[in-house]
Image 1 (cartoon, one colour):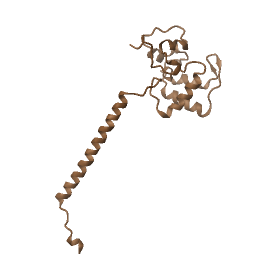
Image 2: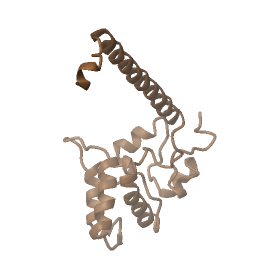
Image 3: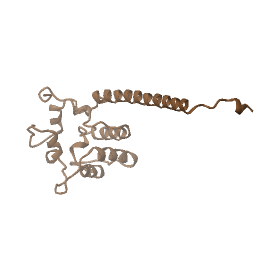
Length: 179
């Protein structure tokens, strides 16, 4: 009997309520999208200050740290971008490292470094030989347009233009090259 006494909502009232709910959801979505858009644009306008050439996502940062730590014990750690992947593969596997005998990385450290260098290194052209020296790397040459490179490039040569190279910061340049 109580069902008989309740008035049934009219179709107009139901449609109006549905329209109001949909407008609220639409307005909320637009507001959230606008806020996310502002946050994204702010991040793009102010990228994090890093020393490497590319932004390194969190899942590669440990590999980068191990890479820099191991390479910089003897010389400047060079960004993986300057050599093709095949060069880095050879460097990681070979115990003969440019005239010095080294102990290659093994286990998880090697895997982490390999993921880092293989992700951020370049592709070798089919017709190209694997470069093992900076002077033979077309990427190194491409990253240094207009630079008169010496015949015998040494690691110390990097610091003359990249004063932050010892801290793995190749973005910072001397005033001469900032232009």
